[in-house]
Image (cartoon, rainbow, N blue to C red; front, side):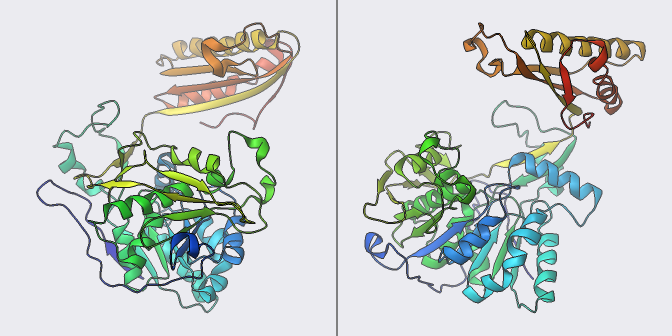
Length: 466
């Protein structure tokens, strides 16, 4: 196992730029060499989040003609879940699906095909993730070079960072004292360096999602930190595939145009040395690659499209052109025009902290005036629990949320108030500082089945877990 520690603290006077240690171009026989003007590199993404389908990796390995297979597992909420898992058992804290269901069963095919794998499945424990994968490789007699990139975990620097009066980027909240995890989002150059050193698999902790694809391109084409437009294009390629099937027809606004969700094709980018690339999917798969699907993913979670801030480059996507390639049996689009600006002097950091407990109850109900019944029932449950709190000298809920699904509550002031709902779902969520208080709430829900409104049929999933 190769471990690369990446220094993530930057100052304006000393900006960290990892050194590229070598260069070996690995060209592919891409389908779109003509459109892109030469040899290309193909990168497929098999996961947009922890919980994505395990069928995608096999599809890309067997049908995608890819050079690199990347997996994105980490959202901000996932970091909290992995931190909790590691607290229970120090061997955990990574995405086990990556090891046991996605890559493990395909290791021989991946190795024989010369495909390199990059994933942030390491979560808050990348070494354990690598150890688990190496065990599977060893059992199958596969020689696997696994690289682990560390340095994103900043918990050891909590005191140092607290003195700098760092605040939340959105609401200026001070750095909490009850931190459970704190990780910086690093970029593509540590990944490229691991590939330079001969890694078959690169496992990272927290990095920006697009870096999983930009890293192989930096490695292949020897891009350096001054190649800003190329880095912006590579980042855009990574951004378009980072959410898996979202760019190949998943959750597309015009969903009626998308066929065969059960066999949806996962995204591939075929990238040129100059930056332009083609977005496509494997042959004979469902889904859709079009100007529309690519455009919707382009604007997903980027904030200002002229200043999408990443660790390696600030991207201007306002001049991007997405052109459908006609005459192609497999839907594909040509993407070009991203502009790069100098990288920032700092990293974004995700910190998680304990902030009390919550419980969520979901109950089905039927009959006339279901919305009114559901709301009255929910309020009665909350009032009964509050009376119990008072008798036990417990403080009130910190927050409560009641919503009647089916009654257009999600539309707020634009809801159709003339609906006479004959069936619906009561959704209640509560937040409290003490676990014991919410255990009381959890026990009191079922009593509504015989002591409140008629028509409550079930508590979905049984008694709520705190």
